[in-house]
Length: 271
Image 1 (cartoon, rainbow, N blue to C red):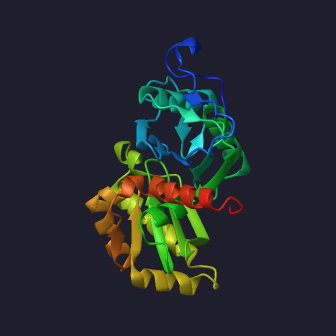
Image 2 (image 1 turned 180 degrees about the vertical axis):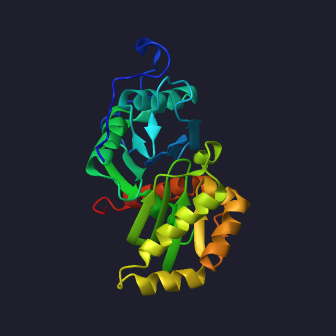
Image 3 (image 1 turned 30 degrees about the vertical axis):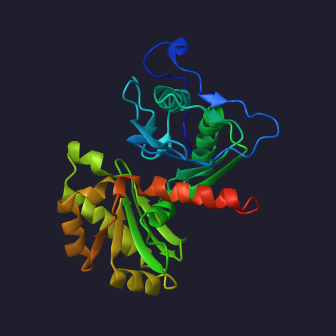
């Protein structure tokens, strides 16, 4: 599905939007510290080595949606909100950093291009690398080794994948999340959706044994859904397998992206 980037802005005039907090890079200086970004449907999060994690709600001052189901739908407003997040924290970001950004699994080229436009406008990176959110969540949860079944149940998107030593082997996603619980969806519906995605993962014969091995280990859950015991209890019953909640589920993806950013900055030729 293509991303439709509109010309809308966050609340207030264009002149009132702060400029990106970006400092010029002095000639001959060392590479700037790496940066990690997670543009979620509910929260914008950015990690800076010197400041740690900064976050702000998505679209709190916008007349129209900024993000929807993991996609940027208003590029200029997303640029303004990310710049405002840095401005409000009095944080300057030097141009030319390496940036690792989370992207929803199975994101389209148009989805990725929209993210690239926003992050280039605000951060002016020398290198921009993308990591699947679900892979970043596994790294951030400290569970990337071996065969793993992981569900990232976010505000507007649920993703499920089987990973082998941190590599996504197969993945599925559905446009349903915890925010839909405020609009008629139920925990049972959300649990049924995640369970259906797991069943779909098991259909290809080559993937079936990996899913079975991962289920014996237990599904790891990150995202806002991991904070809901009613949802995780339903998943245990539906899957007939243990369900493990990550220690810091809402920020697991950004934590994983930050670890990936540090590793990539130490290996310039790596991806």
